[in-house]
Image (cartoon, rainbow, N blue to C red):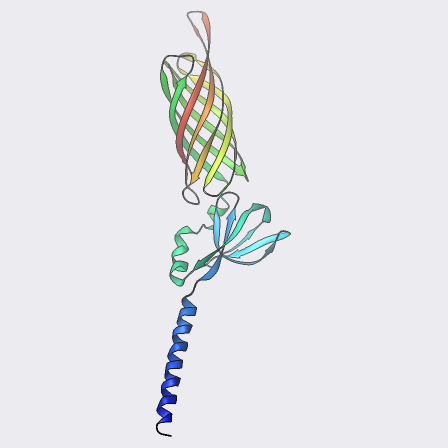
Length: 241
């Protein structure tokens, strides 16, 4: 009996430690977190508590904030595994409610301009404030363009459509407006082009585009009226936030 008892105790102790290590390994194993990608390129990491194609999805993030998202706003839903350390490290990637509902954006861009019917190459700079409704956006832009010796400042409407894939977002746009320059020079403008935008964070991205730009320049000098028409090709790069 004395020889058997220590053996049983040893077996119990070994079994107990195996159970502890097994429990520890199980608790540290990866679990799953819901990642809801929206069509505007943003995403939320958390837990889906309810929702279907016929009703809003309710999602709670690690801060306990609850979001209600329409199915039409969702691009896809993914699962991601996490440990406790990764879970706590997700904070920098989270969007808050203001970023989620932010339809406004500002575009700053500029670059090279090739005037097709002139001998010189020139530059242009643009600033555009826009409002987005899903894939469409409409905004107001201002531009500085230098064409030969003429400096023109067009004000225009900007309409664009963006394909909201993951981080890379192709888009095309149309601009129409009116430009004013020095010495009473003025005239209508039109531009159209396409580009691609790369989403760096939930609220900040870089972009590049190529476009055709038409600018009319009408003015009068010494009683003589002049009408000049410029056809230009633009290659621009910039940021959007």
